[in-house]
Image 1: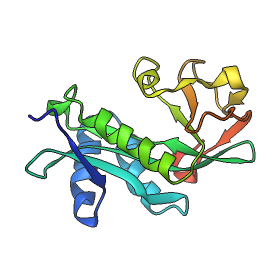
Image 2: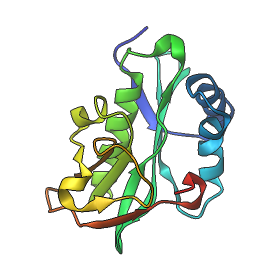
Image 3: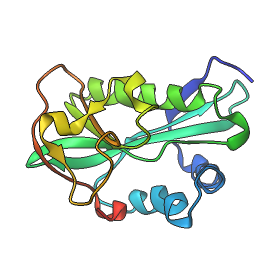
Image 4: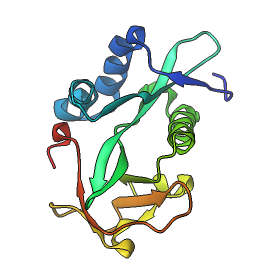
Length: 168
């Protein structure tokens, strides 16, 4: 497998394989179907749904950003990032996330939050959200909710409001 991943915006032709990747990578049906549900939500930002492919054009990993709010401030949420299990730890997921964050920055977006594994996301610039007064309406481990500023401006405080399909 290549370590030089090609990233691009997800196309309609990718949707079935992205669904298969999510079904293979996530442990529950709810997680696997979340991306499908987000596509039907008005907060979906299609141009921030990124896939990583190999030189043959086969989708290996995907990442997406969708609209959320921190208090009343518009932000983005890094949603599910999945990679075929047999291709995990090859850099496909990282390439998709980095591409999505760069696209968001280039669009003038300012803030991104993620609810995820605390040892994975700091490499992209995410830090503990609670330090900035960012919180959720549900209890999660303090180091699982992370946030970052894409332009260096201070992060706003407040409760994160996700798109409805997240169920938070």
